[in-house]
Image 1 (cartoon, rainbow, N blue to C red):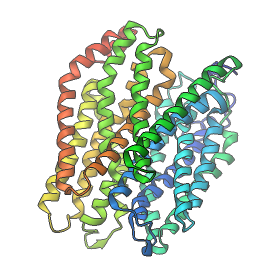
Image 2: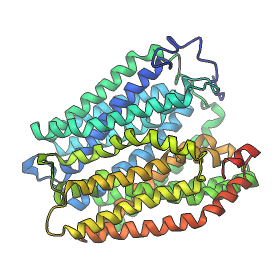
Image 3: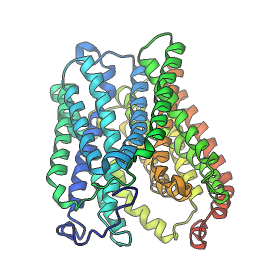
Image 4: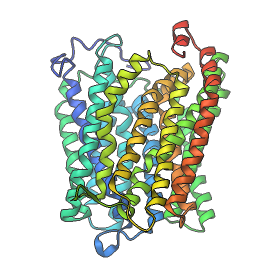
Length: 506
């Protein structure tokens, strides 16, 4: 099918339509695929910084800590940038199912590369995992949506079950990969992540028959007439990449890890700016849509700053766990990877509570205030960590400090993240609604890139100064977001297409 959304009912094509807790049995396939894919991703991420910065004699690569933290941050930024490519390929060329399959194979290959005790193989493996995740990440969710008719009341609960799988995988991975690392070294840990991705592929391939064709169609397949525009776009993207690399090499005086970090950072900063410019200048965007788009800019900035803090779990917070934290709970030793399981555990516990709270409040407060609350809690987590760092200067902080940091950030995530994509799709111009997911990913990409630059620029400063400065600046932006909330809400209402849509912004 060309250029037409596949909206055919799945009721007659999906085997055992209510075979998985009252949901299409295909949800079981995608639930397990994403559970094990997230297991492999977060397991690998949990030990990546330690592997990069540990001494060579201890099995690491011997990179300076600041450079390692920046590389981990820019790795996260690369995943989100490549997710834009993965979404485009699925929409225009290969469909979601094949994008997920190819991405899973590339990820598995990357993890296998990481099991080889060689720096060259390791860097190649990291690149492959980033590329494969970019292909897979945006497309599994879209396949979940295809399991249901547009008016199927089970859709929301289906996504809730699916996201539970994500958090189960994220919760288990740091424990098991951390234990493997302690038992057999870093490459044993990466091998466990590879096994997890292998399970994901097995579930996905074996369960294809239950998907009922979900993800097979290419929603907006490229035509012969599209080719000149696509070639121009490809040349512009390649030109931008070359320019970013050349500038980074010139600034750094040569090609190395720091130049790589800068190159990806430039691309992560340029991509959302270019996207907004294209949208504002497009003749297909109406005045009402421009009103909504102006309202989205502060939300995008708040999201970018939130992810700048939140995504430091794998970089600066991992270093704090390893170097500045007493790794015992009730006298029981714990690996530093343990703390990366706190967030998914709390998501599983608190998400139903927050869903109940928003229901009782009739989905109040408005979107802009929820974004401000999310950024505020993220900022407060770093302010608290700065105070704790000063209080325990010269000694190691108790483990509850980092647990509380992650708990505060999780509350912020539950305020901002669930409404983020909904706000993005609501406020994006109709002509660009298909690219809304890409714009949301770009907020995370830019936030991680800011982190990478901050880590390099503040090398040598104390934890108290680093976390305190970032926390206070982010808190100031949160205050600005609270002040702008009425303006944002007015512009959202002014650009609403229906009275019902406007009424959602109380």
